[in-house]
Length: 368
Image (tube, rainbow, N blue to C red):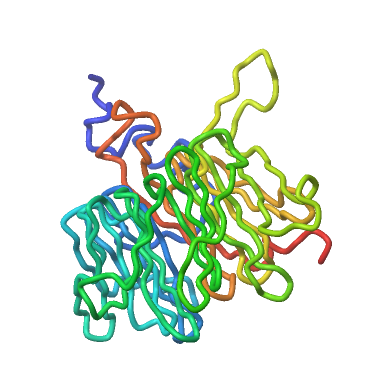
């Protein structure tokens, strides 16, 4: 062990004795770091809705906690509160009025966190980990939708210990999204189910997957009239499918594109292919962000079918992302996703949440 080796107290590996002599790989995009990030891998991020003033960010983690930060206009972040589950928190969402946060956990429960009183109560129970949670606000009802590895999709009115409805799925829920009156759930074994939510939730259509590998993330997109019209589906094989529910010309309108891959297409060296960990649509422009196990985020224009930007590579995977309600802030989380197994897990490595100004970079190409 050399005198100035990794255990010498002169910072982490890769920093010289006289400060940071190597490139800053944990934040190569020089974005704003959120203060007091979780102590284990970050699974989900969600910004507050436009119904409350300001911007509040929620993040759930494998340290069994969910945290809330206030994001001030100058970019400073203030930790406000946190709550615990007895297992990893793997999804989170807000109520439409911004007063409550819902969390889904591997402990097989979902909880409702009242931010005003800082009280938490259990609102859902499954026989397996709950992988997805969404708030549904319909004209005649409002409820929380939970998708679980117990192969059920359940709907809860938050006041009763029993669900309003339980729908059987062919397989475990891997990811889901809701934009009223549509929900889409992607399951194990490449299952895809679209639900309609008007009057009461019901199965609308089962789809053959446009992707050949395991589903990882899904996000609904809207048409020019602000109605949900299709979804983007990401897989573990560095690919995203853009799928319209009722396209005029399915063969032409639906397509897939490769992303989160390295070494280009040079056949001499095999291509490294990474999972697409999350997809998020910009609330104003309708362009989208993808984040991956390769430690990069990319911005895309699905209508022009072009890539708008790809980030520099972070020193660990990007596990979650979201936009704030007006699309000015892009949040993304950097932490290990276990995509390379336990050998690559380094408990010394910190987890980060970064905030980036997204107002300009996500404008569609033709609207310059």
